[in-house]
Image (cartoon, rainbow, N blue to C red; front, side):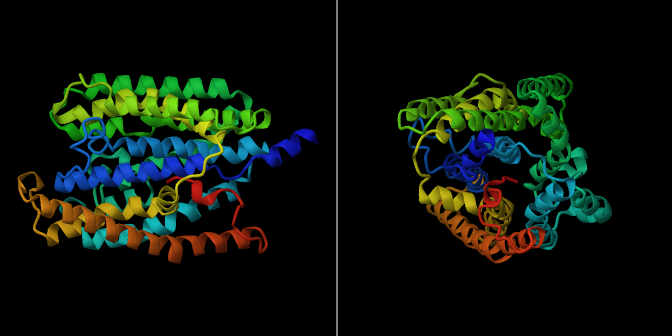
Amino acid sequence: MQEKKKQELLPSRLEVLDGLRGLAIALVVFFHLWQKSWWNPLERFETLGQLVPRGYLGVELFFFLSGFCLYWPLARREALPSWQTYFSRRAGKILPSYWLCLLVAWFALPDPIAHADPHLHLLAHLSFLHPFLLETYGSIHGVFWSLGVEVQFYVVFPLVAWLFRRSALIGTLLLVALACLYRLWVFRSFQLETEGLAYTGRMNQLPAFLDLFGGGMAAAVLVARVQKRVKPHLAWGIVLLLGLVACWWVFHSFQGLPNGRNGQMNHQAAVRLPFALALLITTVAGSLTPLKCPLPLRFLAAISYNLYLWHTLVATLLQSAMGITEPWKVTDESLRVRFTLVSWLVSLALSTLITYAFELPILRRMSRKARGGESASGAEVPAQVTE
């Protein structure tokens, strides 16, 4: 009974998760807009300049947070939900916004490759199997590849959770080993491919991210355990700072890796394990620090899923409207700045509208139906689940 009371005292929502999620989506959006305009607002600052061109690591951060959020209810309550409940919650969070964006992207971003074989590409994306095939990996809308990886982890999560409930240490070590062995195999088998998509596509399959998902799950276990024994205190801010410094090192590390076609992918693959460890330290320490997440990061965290889905679609359409076909040749910096700012503003407005007028009403309706009229607020940290 005493253990049950301790479980119930654990918070359902953690400020540190909102902060990390807000940072993750900001990194991803700045990175993609930089790719379309080649404007880096931080390039004049020597140490901060790498944050934008290496903002692709925001996706890795999302996967870590996903592992944490999926396992956090189990770490708190020590109870497995039914299969029906688990998958209905995942479907309610992922599918409505994804289907809406997929429909708009199909007509607004006509992909010649996808439209040449619509049955293959639509079926692959509707089943979330598109990352497996190189021809569908980046088709229709480029950011969709990570949704496939995410949903695939949802499918195997019950098995991984079963293993973690028996031994979180063995489960973590197994996922780390599988991820490292898989990445090593891809590096040796596809690194010399003349077609870079083969290497990138293989390195961005689910097995290559298992240490990030597992790191998030391990962090959930540690947070649940330490919060039963340790009271939040500002002194933990020192450990939090060390974790953030470690994350900072990840962004600036491995400068000597081969560049060229696979340079970005090499960096992503090389830092996934140390990044997972740095994020674990940051999350555990942050959960023990009585600091509130800044309002801008909290807002970005709340709309992060739809902002991720829509920002590149908005930017691509705006890029075409402004005539920016070869951004690396644009010498007018004011044009680059206007493009970036307008892309941000339109993406934020659209994502906010879809989140609060479309996604959340559906989630609340599903939650009331599942719980016999009980409100969804505070039920299970739905707004903190990353997809």
